[in-house]
Length: 215
Picture (spheres, rainbow, N blue to C red):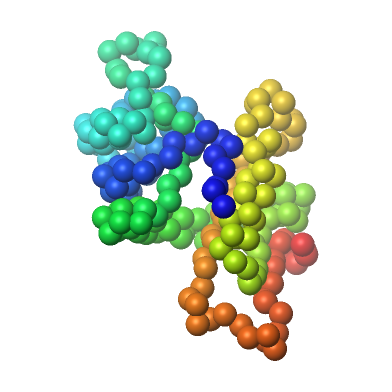
């Protein structure tokens, strides 16, 4: 099943572009532009861990692959402003060796970038949340047994649910809304891990409110 691109993300197919993006500063730049909108290299610098000149170099490198572009000039026309070329990006692992290698490099960097997010949330954000936000928060670790076609269908169904919330006009958001990060790992297991017909049902470990609520 083809994965639909309902959000208009940039689809990266060039292995060189994958390798170009597989850098912590470049991923940080792209995430910052997608989240907060246009900025100059100087404005981005403190958030991405690089000097303005190095940040500017990375921006030009990303622009060479169409991932960022010039934004409308700000009040200070002496500084070049940049914006993300799309709301997000996606890529699939190519069939050839070069493509597979490049996709693994980018995937590894993205996994590493996300690895500390849950722990940082638990230590820095969760303690200050109101109970109304703590209850739906948390994680679900669900194991399912499906075919590759069924897994693609599940991914498409999840995206269909998310699209209206991602694409709606900011003016239409409820007054009490806030940013929520949804981390979704899709990790097919090795073929020899497939359960036999007499095995127990797949595990479904859930936690919502870390202070004791349930999902």
